[in-house]
Length: 221
Ligand code: IYR
View 1 (tube, rainbow, N blue to C red):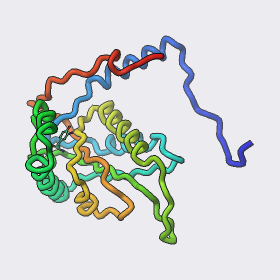
View 2: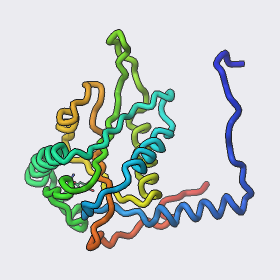
View 3: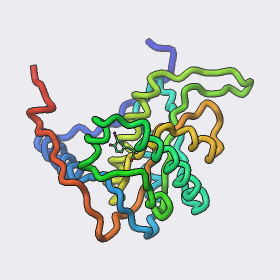
View 4: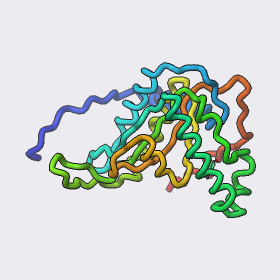
């Protein structure tokens, strides 16, 4: 017996038909998620965003270290600062850092270095990865599988926001260090993802993309 405390598992055991039905319903819901780049300036319920972040916080993580931090930005001045700094990096990326192959891969998405939505989108969530925690005495407590843990939590955040009826864009202006500076985060936190959150603008259009069918995703042995 472990010397550490345990509690009984709270788990909904469902009939098989319900398991199938729910699996399919969730697929249908998630298949409607799209990354968007035309956001409405309309306000969104911030409570719902907080709840989605709480959901992200239920993700599994290495040694249960929960190595993430989320900053919810609504202040117009901060959003503007983020926009300007992101556009500086993106300009450099599009003009200098990208290979021709990369530029060609992005062409169907119609992206460029201009990120006007960062100004008017109601919320920007900046997710930080926490590579180590700082103990009160200033020493470092290491986190494990930070990349994997943050990837899972981010996926859950995007799913939770979509489920709530809010649209997102996973945006990675690179390098992203400027976000830690603007948001005054400590040195153990590194930007992981910039996530504008809002309603799509009424005239929002998205690339005509196809998703890989299951046969191309799944190998059963
Ligand atoms: N970060 C840039 C470029 C970009 C890169 C990839 I890979 C994308 O899937 C989309 C964009 C930008 O946001 O424009």
